[in-house]
Amino acid sequence: MGDLDVVLLGTGSPLPDPNRAGPSSLVRAEGLIILVDAGRGVVMRLAGAGVIPPFINAILLTHLHSDHICDLNDVITTHWVMSPVTTPLTVYGPPGTQQVIDGLLDMLAPDISYRIAHHADLDSGPDVRVVEVVPGESFLVGSATVLVGATNHAPVEPTVGYRISAHGVDVVMGGDGVPCVGLDALVAGADAYVQTVIREDLVKLVPRQRFQDILDYHSTVPDAVATAGRGGVRHLILTHYVPAPPLGQYDEWRALASEFPGEVHLGDDLTVIEISRAGS
Ligand SMILES: [Zn+2]
Ligand SMILES: [Zn+2]
Image (cartoon, rainbow, N blue to C red; front, side, top):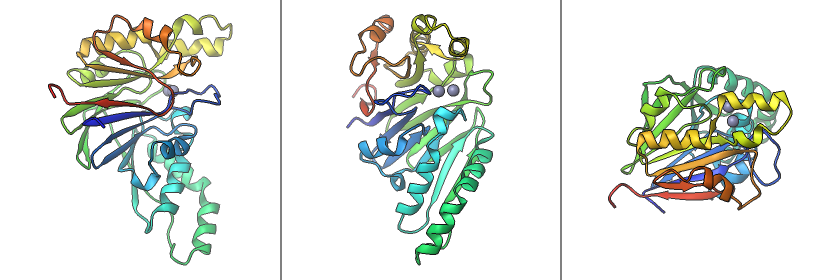
């Protein structure tokens, strides 16, 4: 284990893939477990990483696109039913997050009533606490300080990125989006930068306008390399591959990032990237 680890729980995208869960990542350090986004299959991948939802200190949402939140309800339910006593689950996200959580809890209302009726030791539903955040704010999660930054995923708004500082390591979760000054400010001087990426060259080959539309609001691999270079980070971590390569076959993606002077990390679901603090 590094001073801080990033676990790529789900490296997929909205495109159904039998081998890749939807977008979600774990930031893990001694005494700290932060879940960033909660895409398709997140609870299965958490189990693969040895984490059950009650172990999570907080959930951070970068934005409210369905691929990043579609299994958040499963995290909420599993956190609730596996906790010995009902404990709060804090979800940080951009404005709109409260509306999404309220809707999820509405959807879960029948299930919540069944379980409360069935279990004598359960007398209340999930205690989900939402904190809506905007760029410039910061907050504490256990031993970590988290800074919120602006990202550009227009026309999807609002969207945010997070800089998580813990155990002497700073890691930026860029979420979806194209390069922008807000992201540059968040990345500057960090140790690691996690960016969702697409392959512009391959997406352009698909003659479907709805698919081509994704080109204008996602970073390409060279975009991510450029942002990482401006920020001077040591580790560039790429995820959310569109279109996803076959498992284990990252040479073409890696070649597109060959100009990055630091370490480039790509991988299948459950890849662990260990980050040590600078100079150690
Ligand atoms: Zn998105
Ligand atoms: Zn996405």
